[in-house]
Image (cartoon, rainbow, N blue to C red; front, top):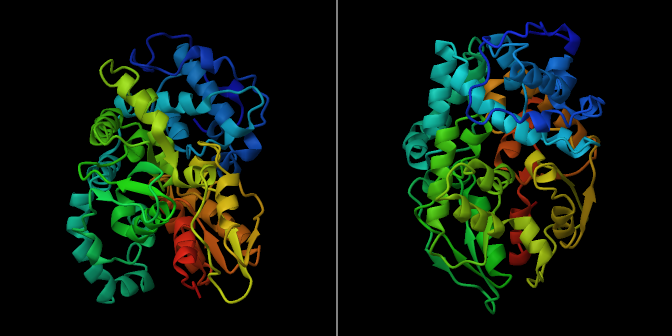
Length: 449
């Protein structure tokens, strides 16, 4: 149903149309809060690229309303408009009426997964994603093969002859593959890492799934920055996926199972705070009370867990940052910070990362055009919707490059992969750092270039 005008939605008033089931459909009360003003349109990345009303927040809310009322069905045509949503939450930040689109789309995605059959190829692709990426041990099994693929020159050949071009989603997965480091496969952190100074806090650290295998240097840097600022760090070995990936794609049962496991992992740690260094993961961790709202046993535990969750930049900006900082370059270092959507729109964290980066001597922080626009990563969106994601990635990288900065700071692994991909496609070899890596280098007196 690619309609550009909501009035073109077929009205049948047929309550027998296939629609949402009884289990937590999108709330009619929340739907009715939308006054259809259209403020969300200019900030919605999918609407910008696709240009159709039904691929905007307002259009999707019209669809939810119509399906709730039996005026439209949940079918392949309508489901594609929900699938086209990146879940970036820019519309939530923009909406003058305070419409909770985040809660509406969070309730709609499981409905789509339960009630709209996928074609065999789509099923297979999603099976691979949801049974591999959230499981570090399973993913780690394939790292030696991926390492061999890279060092043998096969990756260069595959990309040169565009072997995967007929398979755009597989090509999208391959295109964001970072350099493999085999040392991360079986790496184990101590359960407790002592503070380097007088202990002021006892904090838990979440390692992540993709983060611990592909961006372990970010985890190492995070731990060092925390311990340099009076934190005793606890890392429970039983922790798994935070549930962000399945939660963002409507895999409700899997998301709930991961959330329970994470809560249990930290239940007896006696930590003051639970720290996360990935934006998408952090937003999901703070949503555990919603994810487990129907679980009377775990809901109180989820609420207590959420009360302790802090993004690492949020935490460090709120405490006394006592670690001495040295310049990371010999001269002025121009840096541009990329706002990750689930940090900016989901957690309302924007000033804190900039405050921390500005503590580093010689840093000159640049601001990009359209900073609040999604880069197109959005969890696994750049694998499932590669065409839209590529256009957004190209725009984001152009805006970052236009600042003239010598490096980019990104607080989310998915964003870093997406940006690195499009930097390479545009012929630029600019480093992308996590803010914790830059702070860590500054504390240790290391230079970045």
